[in-house]
Image: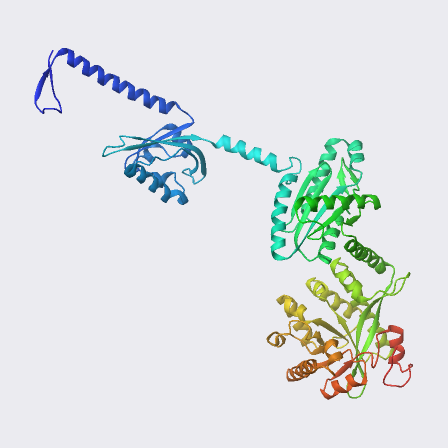
Amino acid sequence: MVAEFTTSNTGQGQVATDGELSALALAEQRHNESELRFRALLESLPKVAVQGYDSRRRVIYWNEASTQLYGYLPREAQGQLLEDLIIPDVMRDGVIAAHHDWIEKGIEIPAAELELKSKSGMPVAVFSQHLMLAEHSDDPLMFCVDVDLSEQKEARRELEYVTRYDALTQLPNRHTFERELEEFIVTAERHGEYLAVLFVDLDRFAEINDAKGYEQGDLLLSMVAKRLRYCQRGSDLLSRFGSDEFVLAFPHLRVGNDVLQLVEKVLDSFSRPFLLDGREVHVTASLGVSLFPDNGTNARELIHNADAAKNRAKLSAPNRFWFFNQKIHDELLHQHRLAERLQLALAENELSLHYQPQVSAVSGRIENLEALLRWYPKEGGAISPKEFIPVAERSQLIHRIGEWVIREACRQQAEWKRQGVGGARVDINLSGKQLAMANTFKHLEACMSEFDLTPQDIGIELTENVLIEAEERILDTLRGLYHRGMKIAIDDFGTGYSSLSYLKLFPVTSLKIDRSFVRDAPNDPSDRAIMAAAVFIGHRLGLEVIAEGVENEEQLELVREMKCDLVQGFYFFKPMSASDTTRLLTGLVGGQPRIVS
C-alpha cells in the first residue's frame, strides 16, 4: 500500500513506502496517546488546578480542579483573561507586567504562595507554579499549576489562634498581651500619657474549684472574663494569664481620678453574685495597679509591679486594690473610702443644705439664696465640697445626691413660704452629669409640684461648660423653664469657654462673675477690665450680673462702681444652716445689713 504526503523540506510530493507509513502512524498514535495521558493526569489531580493561557493571557485550558477551586466551569473560563478571572485588583498590574517580562525578557515568574479570588469574590489561598511552553515561538503558552492551600491556611490560623489566645475564655494570652502592651507604651511615651496595668486575682478560687468541680470552675472563669470585658473601653486590653488571673491595660489616662474610676468599675463587676450549679456564689478579687511611666518603662516591669501590688492587696483584705506607688495608692485609697462613706452619708442623713444670700449691691436687701451642699459626718469634722463633690461625680453618686438636693431645697422653700418668709428665691446648682440624666428636670418639676412651688420660687445655676456641652434636648427644656419665668444663671462666668457667640444662644437670666476676678480686681488691672467687660456685656444682653466672693469694703466699692446688680460673699453673709437662715429671714438675727454667721 502506498500513501502520499508533502514534507516541509522540498514542497514536492513524494511517495512513502509501507514502512514509512507505518512509522508515521505509530508516531501519531503515540503522540495522541501521550496527550490523552497528560490530559487524564491533569484531570485526575483533585487538588491541583491547572490552567493554560495563550500569549495574551486568554484561557485555553481549564481542568476540573480549577473549577472546584475557583468556581468557573470550563466553558465560562474559555477565552477569558487571566486577570479578569482569578486575580485580585491589587495584583492585576503586577501579574500583567510579570507575564510580559517572561515573554519579552525571559524572566520567569517564581513559584509562590498567593491569595487569588474565586468566582464569588472570596479569597483562595494557593501555591502557584508556572511553566512556559513554546517559549521562543510566536505563540508561547503559559500553564499555571495551583495547589489548594485552604486546609493548610486554616490549620495555620488555628495554630496561630492557639498560640495567641486562651482556649477557655477566648481572651489574648500573656504573650499576646505583652506584645500589644509594648505598642501601647510606645504610643503613651510619644504623647506623654499615662497608662495603667491592673492585675486581677480571684480570691479563694481554689476552694470554689474543689467544692464545685473543675467544670463549674471553668464556667466561673468564663463568666468573670465576660464581666471584665464590660470594663473595657474601646482601646483597652484584657488577658487571661492563667488559672484565676486576669490582667487589663488602660491607655490614654490622666493619673488621678481616671485610674481610680477604672479600678472601682472592675471591683464593681464582682458586686453581683455568679450563678453556679443553680446557686448564687459571691466572688471577690484582689487588684494590683502599676502605672506607666512611674512604675515601669516596659511591659514586663509594669506587669511584674502590678502583680506585686496585687499580692499586697491580698494581704490586706478580700476585694481590695493596691497601687504600686505608695503615695498614689494612699491618695486614691482615701478617695475610694470617701466614696464609700459618702454613700453611707446619704443613708445616715449626714448631708445638709446651707444657704448663702445674694443681696442688692445698692440697698443690701436680700434678694435670693443659693443652696450649697454640706457634709457633716457623725464622726470627724466637716468635709469640704471641693473634696467630696468630685468623688460623687466620679462614683455616680452625684445623681442620688443631686435628687436629694433638689427635693430638700424645694421642701425648705415651701417651709419658708408657709412661715411667711419665703420672698427670696432659692437657686440650685446642677452639674453636667446631672443634666445628662433624662429624669433630672422631671424630678425638679415633680418636687416643685409636690411642694406647690412656682418657677419664680426656684432658680438654677449652671457653668458655661455645662451649657456649651449640653444636648439640644436639654437646652429645649431650659428654654421652656426660662419662658415660664425660672431664673437661670451662668455660674463662675469667665473661667470657662466664655464665648460671646454661645452666650446669646443660651436661655439665661443672670451672669455670676467668678470670685477669682473679684478677689484680685482691686489690685489687678486685667481682672478689673475683665469684670467691667462682663458687667457691660451682661447688661447689654439684659442679664442680671452678680459678683461672687465679695469679702471686704474695697471689693464692695469696686462692684458697686461697676454697677453689679447683686453681691454674694462673706462681707455680707457666709453660707448658713437652714435654721440660721430662717432666723435671718424672720428678723431674729440683729438688724445690721452685714451679718457673718
